[in-house]
Length: 563
RNA sequence: GUCUCCGUAGCUCAGCAGGAUAGAGCAUUCGCCUCCUAAGCGAAAGGCCGCGCGUUCGAAUCGCGCCGGGGACGCCA
Image (cartoon, rainbow, N blue to C red):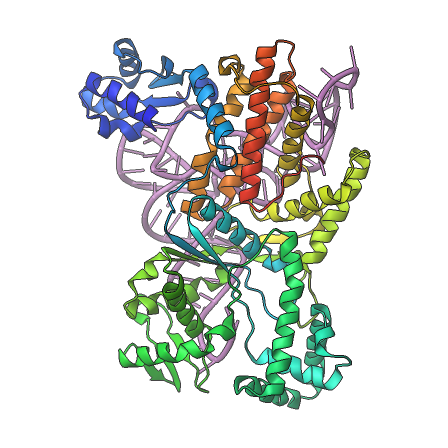
């Protein structure tokens, strides 16, 4: 960034412009051989009334190159600048190797808090593949913000309230055969499925279910105990899966947590004249903003998710005083978020501008749809396990001598699954097929992890060799240069990922690092005969290892040293 | 019907505060392990960047209109 400023300062006087005016004209050429920065002269041709190409070559003649640059070249209408590779290489290497696991981090978030609501599973329901995007993206954002110095609050907004628990209890009372504590999620789900089958034949079961939920709401001891135990069971069980993915939450406050916090919201909406009665329900009319009304209280007097989300937003502001509050929730709920954000705005909560719906695409199966009721479910844990099993088989084939195959398989298998939803723009839909999810070739986590392991392997072989004072000017081949540029791009990628709430910016960045390293590795011998060259290349390898590890860590993916 | 998002290679996607011959991976075909992990590297082939109009010196990128697809649209979340 000072590089551009220096160039602007040097060029501006030659064409009678202000340095600040031409600063953002600079661009980075697509191809490395065209230099590191380019100054297009099209716009100057209007002012100077000359052909752009002529301006470029005249500028080149008159220009005094600022320090840090090795040459300038006029190519057609462009003036291309090449940075001095030795000093550039030296500073990148030095920065990575001295900052280590903090390379790419920042203090911009110091003293500020970001809330991230993600994963948000339902109690006594499957933790399924369709939860993967929210879970993986949310966790990556959580880690990225933390890396940038923010205090981060990860919130699993549990679906732990509603008539489905009346159904669960009804089913348990009718068909349960052991203490509720002994029921796994899968067993609870089969009770739930059975309830829906039987309720087809005997609709009165639905009344029983409603009655049981009413008991929960009115604090009936038996109902509360069953509900609480189902909730505890579920949390205990899903924590195992979360742990596999390196995830933990700071808050598990779900829907039930806000039961006693909605009354004040409803009252405030009435008092301020924001809500009104319509068809027996209390609504906020949003037609002025071209939106359907937001329902606050249903005609039967019960609350609804909008009410809960409003209460939750207010609670989080009060409790955490966030500077940003993110909701990692599928785009099906776009309208819902626009509605309740608008209601918060009408309530005078100016901080609602800091709330963001981080939406993502639909998850589907190729030729079926997910449905708990029909029992058509893909458990996330089964998919993780399938990936780990496949990885284990690959390791046995490719690295039969590896000592701890199981832990490497776990890192790589789970990493591959997480990566599948962290490599593309969030908004892209995800359609599940076993072939796709178990493909570890090409632009995948295993590729990046393999590259990391490769770096570690080389470094192990050089354990006794001192490369702490590398001569970066020896890294002047194009492969090393491309790699250095990729390493240099990492800190900006982290910032951009946070700015856009898009983890794929980090994924793409470390993918380009891995790709550049593999080309470098193939073309250049790292353990070169010349000790000075060897030292420089080992330092570069160590820096690569570090950046890959940092990037994978931000995505919540392990970086194994051997695989 | 209204609102909203998306449309780039056979497939999955980058690129879109406008700029130099549009990039990857997968799949296909063909090469590269006497040398640091071949889960790697290379090559070939593959594109009216959905269509049209406009703004501009310049549009995959910005605006408008079509077409095609996803999603949402009052008492589920």
